[in-house]
Image (cartoon, rainbow, N blue to C red):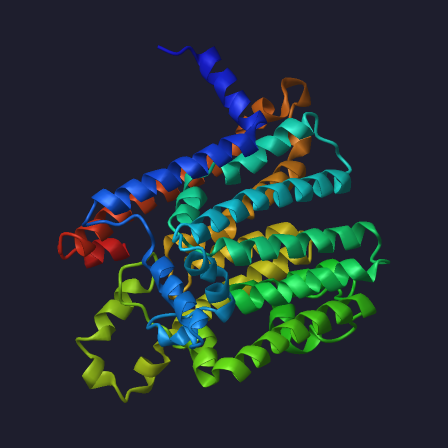
Length: 432
């Protein structure tokens, strides 16, 4: 049997060579996926959506609209990216691209962690080792690896968010004298919102990060929430205006261009559909069972009922309230990273639809949030024991939370498999 010391050395080697380790892991999962797709007829490894935007890419190369492919509900940019599958006649190419972006995002996380070290007045001993450990929580996390290898494109808006944060932090450390960094960050923020709507929730934390003094902190929290639509546009400085105008212009330009090419169908499928969407298929959403019950059995009865039609919007109320509450409460304390992390967790947890890909949105921010968490608790740590060992007490609630989340997810997958593959009536079990 392997000794504890041998296992420890192996773990240390993997963490120290995290980029090599994650590259091997991605390739291993990709190869496994090819075998499962080839020999397992009942359960395919490749995400069904991967085939959807590959078909959309084929339509684009034929001079057609990507929306001629039924259920294609993404920006046309994704179809353009997936066109490499058709051009080079290798359907795995986009998967390789998503895996490469996964690994690249780890490098951007490392740059961000270095900037956080510069910003941190209380230096943590062993910060290089800690940095590699934190990066490993993303690069060696099996969920992002499997999701990218299955062909999910959710890593693209996620890395665009990381790039936005990186250039905002670079602008901050230059005292916002270099406007180029603000412009670049705003462009990538606009691009991320175009690619996937959810990053729009980061607008307020980013604006506050650029100028933390533009809102008075002596006001009650609920005062900010009630007056947010008005107060967010007052007392903006030039840097905030640049960020807002560039990001808004990027979004409008992309929408206008693709509307010119593909018309109303582009607007509806890419954006409006998601606002009214009610997914009755099994997913992680807390609203799944409600939508399932109202999808067929009472649809005819309630077809003209206002409540039925407004159900998707009603379901969004707790989500938007909690996202606003967490974002404002944390950003008022100067915690921009924790604000966007908590916003993302709550947004995903209370979204009308939630699949495994959505967890990527906060997984990728987890190393940054964990670094901030350790910084805020550094006074309680015994540095003489080493950061990882001495932080064990601080890691305990995090490990417990992740353990509970993992057990819940695996339980859900068991019941979902019974529904999808075996036809068993486990809908209530999936919901709870």
